Image 1 (cartoon, rainbow, N blue to C red):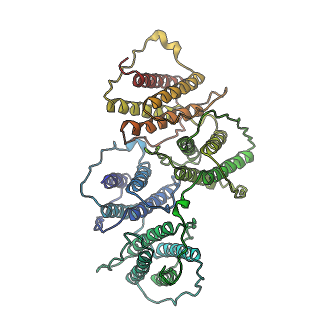
Image 2: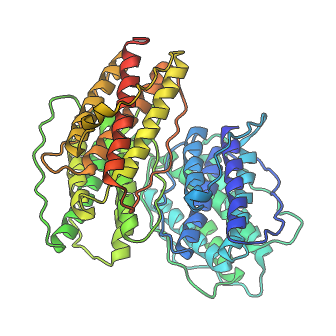
Length: 574
């Protein structure tokens, strides 16, 4: 129900985009709801995100990082996180001054995953005219079929089965309905293999609809097969990230049929004639070693670029005198992802959506995924600049802890400071972050039925008390310490991580980092007091220079109000 409501907001944004681009929307009928599982909805949401990415590139707004389909059991919660990300990415395509106020979605009852799938499918079809296309082409269907063949080859390899090199003969003069028949035949093979593996709720192949079949219908069928193959990999406890093949040209339904028949010949049956090679799928969960490896690659990339620019960053050794939890490592990585919007601005791109801290326990897999997102963002920036770096040897690490990742993320933060320049982060994003913190504190007060204290009246004789940038940095550390006291009172036992230091630099970068950390810590407190919703505005890095004196005044006012609210939580009514 929550996912369906979120997709309805996605449709509202699409309607506004049609108006902004002066496009006449042709009637696109919403597809009929069919029985689907969350894994299929997740795959469809990835498809929509891919189209939004194409739209951004066409408009010269810069690509976005797109996650891989995860090899694990997909839950409605994970679908919600992805759909929210998709919606926010689309929302950012609307100019900020023209974005309509976000309305509260209408919650419909008796909604099943198939309803969410069909609504996302409808959204996908509605994006096509904005892209200047009419659905998927045979070339794109062939590309997906090639990817499926590679997935099945991997499954064969995992079972120590010999390669079948000879492809079936190519047909001639076939149409999309014949390609759809070949896809359904392949899905039947997948369905039987899942039964032989004792997998619950295998996806039964559908009947071929009695209507004109388009390449998009074939593409949708292959998306379902792909989700089922990912599920089989999880069942067997095996995984390998397989690169998506390059798009080829001049492909026809005959080429697609040849590949799909070949895939049907390749797929293992997993019957009782051979022993099944299977492994503990818990081993597929990512560890701190995996995240440390990716973070090391990111640090290497940024170091190489800064060296090429003639800049040497000597990161100060940071002594950690407290336990660093997965949440702290995730927060540090998340802040670095937010900082990559500065790189987007340098490339002339609009910001990308950055997630909020999850309202649940952070896992090592969460850290790995946010670190992989960070690497993708850096790669997008490198592609925009044309910079090539020396690939680092893939080291293998053992026994790494969240603290090791946290320290690496702080080093990456310093590299980002050097790359973007100390003054790239102006006062505006800090003011926006402070406004979000104030809104979060109001939400907590309201939930606890605490009366909000009033903001003290300004007095002209106190004008000299306006803090400078060094003073504001010191105040941000004090507010972080107050947040730690609130965290302890709320019953959260993971201490707040150390704030970002700024020895004599007087830059906004460290202040922004501390304010982001305060906000993330307040979000982490929410579940401990029974709040399970979070609102964080899409992050923006403004290149505009604001009036320094006015900016400092605004920051002072907001920091003072945040301090009052935090102290009131610690001692309500006093």
